[in-house]
Length: 176
Image (spheres, one colour):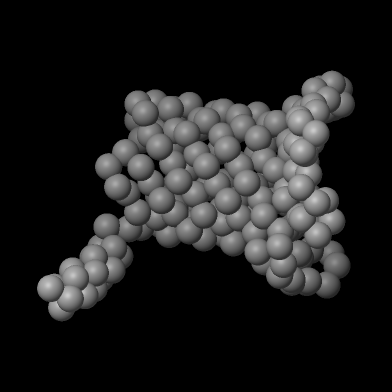
């Protein structure tokens, strides 16, 4: 029985690359509000970012696999502030319900900062959760419009507090 389990696990691992491919996400998010979640509750201030539109270009590349209507991917995600870019390892799960894609992402643990300053890399207890919903446009659903919330969890700096942004955005999810 043990040999059968080992052979079945090995076959599953070897079959995964045949069912997986690459995905490139290119888009922009526009923060529309900020908040802070802590042991004292959740505080939000939705007015601070409604006065200004500050687009943040983003990109991600993932090795993904499909399991029915669920996609799982692992790769890297980056945000650019035009002169500086920060990138980190990222994983996502996407549930497709008709023309709507619901995504949950988690990234962090390491980062790279590059641009006009010298490239910097680091590791540590930094996690970036993101939950979003996207309406898919076009025949293949490549173009997407939606919104979500992205947070930043750094226990060594912020304790149990998690600052987050509410955002609206658009992106192209391109299969490679």
